[in-house]
Image 1 (cartoon, one colour):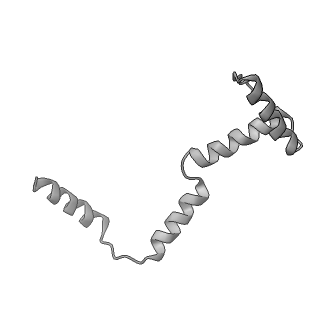
Image 2: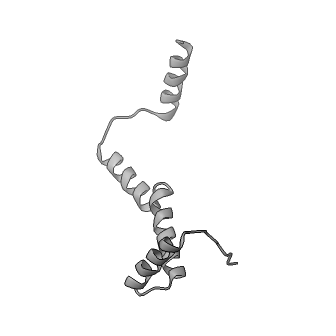
Length: 82
């Protein structure tokens, strides 16, 4: 279901936005949707691809690790030291 988003801007800013959309051959509505989509992609946290790339980099390091149960036990021991 589509919803309408309304924003209030000054006349001068509206003209600037219309010109920006026209430069890309888009309606103001389509231009705004694309700009908002790009902002959501970059501002909304890491994308799936960025998360996978980070995981690949971490796995490529080859750092030693222990058994999960052993690590959990060590964490608990560390908590007891406080």
